[in-house]
Image 1 (cartoon, rainbow, N blue to C red):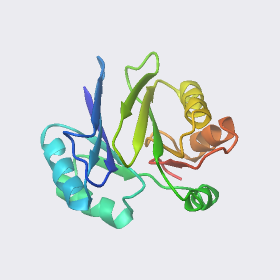
Image 2: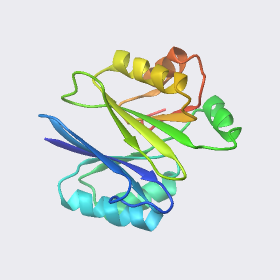
Image 3: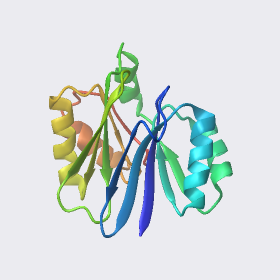
Length: 181
């Protein structure tokens, strides 16, 4: 069974106050907020010790921080952070407030989209697990139409798949991916 975690840097939050779990026959998935880099490093290490092998980090984590977390977690896990293509980064930079955040994750064992809401005073996150690109595009459209400020995609989304999501929402909000650009 695949054990996957999407880690969000969410000041003032921790896995007890800001998390959601989605489990099916093929995967166990965690979306969780942590308070800063050190908390993320410690938490990822503990999850890796518990058998998690795939981690995606939100865009607050850059290459250097991701490498530091990778070192703490060990070579047996894969860790990627969200990044944005230049045009998407420009759109993100123009946002004054980030009160809502969407995450789309393609995952093993998903048949119909599964949506989870994480809420706190500073930011509400909507995470949607889907089975393929078509469901991902529909999920992203729903997020953008619902007023999400920006969207991040899991590491399954390479540049071509990310472009397909951006096209599906008509570029309405910035989109980043943990996948290869």
